[in-house]
Image 1 (spheres, rainbow, N blue to C red):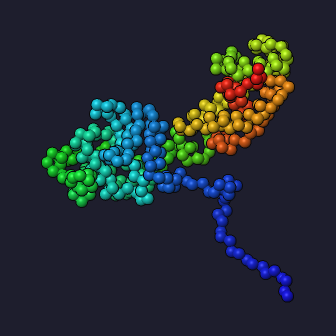
Image 2: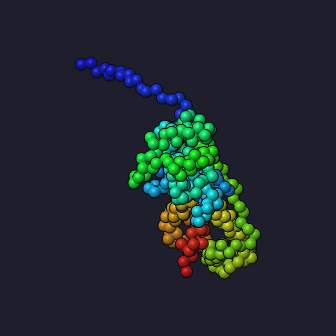
Image 3: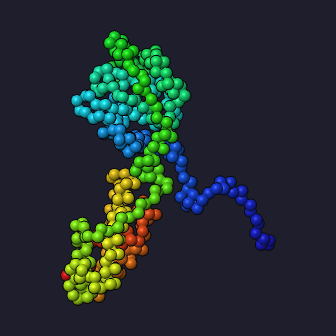
Length: 367
């Protein structure tokens, strides 16, 4: 019997050569322009609202997402001047999440809604009306946007075919009489398009971008140093530290001057204040880089609490020893769930222990 093992040659599929370790671990990154195409239509409107809120915050008093049943052709509204009396100054961002560029036919129906509802007085005419799409405006639509009078002529000539039966399910909208005169006088120069690449680049300047697209986290600014005088926000955790030092020396230490006679503990105390402010700096950095409604720092604080509480509950010779043992564990806790993990330092985690004490979650000395 032949025991030789046959050599089998398998033709492996070709692999792109320039793969990094991260590519192999997580898969190849998706380009931002492609990500626009694969997110849902609702998420795309949210992204446009984020852009208007973050990048154009100096322009708009208020931004509102108005899409859905009964929106009358308005998706994301940026109020230059907000008013409830019908005299608001506003821009409209009409979001079309299609797998192809926006065509004149699609645009004409949306403009038809704008014309009809402003004619009826449902809302006043916007200052600007933008078409926004992952694929942008198609070449024929761009030509019409650049030639407002031709755009108007095309809309009028195609009204019956495109708009008459599509604006309202309850009635046909005829282009005649006063309404036709309104359309003929309407200023088509307010119609514009927003290029998707421009949208991405400007969105990148908002605090929502990293959360939406991922990528490289901006550098964390230097943490601020503790103030010379104890701030009122520090009162509780500092009192608990004094209790820990008192428990160690078996004598009352109630203020900084009492501690200055003990060189090692005094330096330890100053390091703890630095850690407290490091954690505060991380919280502020997160506030500036992640969108509202993401409570990642609070989750990190809870994770640290769960990681140290068993050691907190252990018996120790004194409160000072407990501070040091708990701090060792905190500094080495994994924080993979935290979206800004790469920016977390040991001092942050140790400082969170003092944040927990400051919030009365536990004490170093129980009695």
